[in-house]
Length: 117
Image (cartoon, rainbow, N blue to C red; front, top):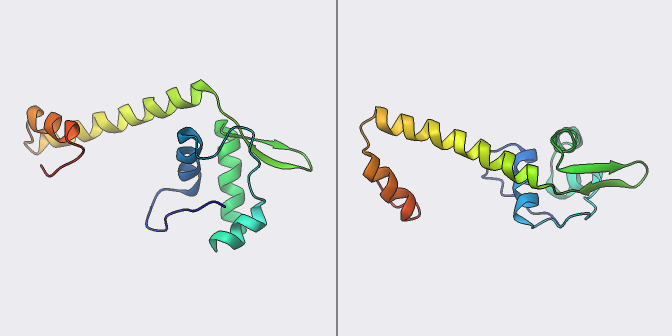
């Protein structure tokens, strides 16, 4: 059973990426069918189909004709995600500097798990 937080505003494929990279979805585990997952999550099947297509395009899952979709894992995927996060952090740090937040404050914030600035 896959549980997704409805408050999470990220696209479904990004949430699945997180589940795969964290190991919550084991390698070679079969994913639920599009229809069953759509019913389970009360989401339009087209949305699930698009998410699966994007995950396959990015290399997070692979399809076996007549059997379904399965989780894959490659170290390059983790490196890709880390690169993506570094780019996001770069933008956030730049924005913080633009509004006058000192480097030491940013470092303190990161070291203390996101406590108030």
